Structure formats: structure tokens, C-alpha cells
Image 1 (cartoon, rainbow, N blue to C red):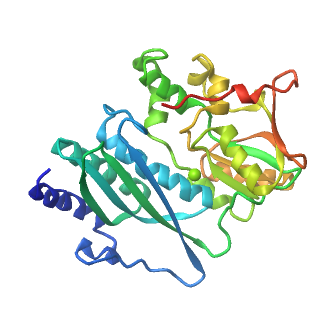
Image 2 (cartoon, protein in one colour):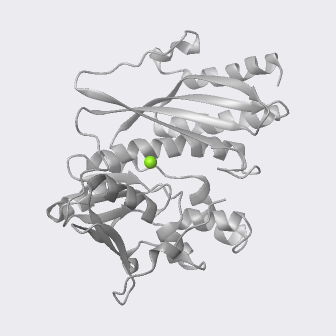
Image 3 (cartoon, rainbow, N blue to C red):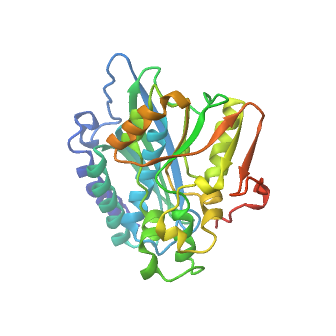
Length: 319
Ligand SMILES: [Mg+2]
């Protein structure tokens, strides 16, 4: 890319700041983010690298949309609402200009869908692969953000939506399972996560711990258990699987160990279950009880007969 092309990127990005007065049309040195009394700003960041975190022939608009959506999922896991985001792109010199225009189109579409704006960004050249980073800003009533550390023995372990779809979708895209035509649902689940923002905000004051499922159920539940100093028992038969996933091999393994589903995994005192189901219905997201928190540390997954499954062999190969 030549200097003039950076100006082109700036031109492409400026419309994404329109509608947020504090973005100052990206003309100033920094943006101004208003913060009402009694609120906290919630900040998260993700970086993705071509060929590592997404496939080089994934459609560019979907890659950019996924980057925004995985950051939104982190806000959902904290119970926060989105405010805005900043980008940094490291672009190889030989990258096609049309590809960048498609990236920006994906951001434009998804920022409109989720009601946030671009607040700033930077573009640099690199001798390596395309690297896209995004920092997201959200807001939450001070002191009410969901954390990983509050799970207590006796709490229910719950998850939104269905698990394993995205990992199966990735396998389809890598040619390891059926053709894409027959499995558009799981491929779409891999490429276009649905951040559970409406559920996350409703879990504040109710869930004792929460995280979004990015690395896989076992890994992410492990983060809650470590942070909370507790253990858990999960029943494999209760894992919510889509009918599409059930039609593919090794669906239960994908649900336990596959990443990229971006569902919310949370813990809840049993007395809150009824209220939680009502709030989840309001958010239009199914939630399922999959197990419970134990005082004894460690993570036990039981099969349908009640026997513990060997979780250490359930490692999932990322690429
Ligand atoms: Mg996360």
C-alpha cells in the first residue's frame, strides 16, 4: 500500500464515526467518551492474524464482523452495553485494496446492528500477514459488572444457546466434515458469532460468575473455577446441541472442547433459576442447566450413565 491508499482507508473509516459526537469525525488527536456519574467504562481488546485466527479465504466482511462480534461478546460476559471501538490494522504491502473496502463494509454493517461507532484507529504496513486488532468500550452501572470470581458451591452451571456448532463449522471449512452446502448453519455459527448482550445485561445482580465461551466449555469453565476457588460437575447428556451439530460426528466432543461459540457460561444460585429463565426469554435466548458448582476443586464431566469422562483426552485441535 502507498501513502495515498492510507488516505483512502481513512476516508473509508470516517463514515463509521458519524453519529458519535465525541468521535470528532476522527479529525482530532483522540476521541471523547462521555461517562455518566455512577457508571464504569468497560474495555476489552482482541487481535486476529490471517491464517491463524481465520482462514485467508474467509470473506473479508465476515472476518471484520467477527472481530467486532467477539469483542462485543466480552462486553456481554461482563454484563456491559456497547459504546464504541477503535481499530488498528497492520496491512501487508501487497494486500488488495478491495479486501480492505470489504473489511470496512463488514464493520459498517455490524456496528449498525449492535448500535456502536468507530472512535479512532490506526493503519500501518507490515512485512507479515494481515493483523487486525480492535479495542471495544462499553458501559455498566458501577459495581454491577459480571465477574469470573463469584461462583459458590451449590450454584447451577448454565449456558446460553447451543455448544459445539462453531468448532464443527471450522471442521467443515477445513474439509474434515460434510460439504458446506449441507452444513451452512454450523459454518455460519463459526463465521458470525451472536454476542449475547441482551442476556448479559439481564444477568447482572443474578449470576454469580460469567464468561463467554471462546476457548471451549471446559477451558472457559476452568477459568471460572480457578477465579472462584471451586470445582464443578457437568452432565454431558445435558449439553445443549443443535440438531445440525447432532448430524455431524463427534458433536459432544465439540460441545465440550470446541471454541468460538461465544455463548455465555454462567453460574446461578438455584433460587434464581425461575427469574433467570424469565429474563432469558425476554432476551430471546435459551439457557440450559448443565451441572453444578462443588466445594471440591476440579472439573468432572459425567456421561449418561453417571461415569466420569476422561476430560484430559478431550483436547480440541485448533489450527
Ligand atoms: Mg472472553
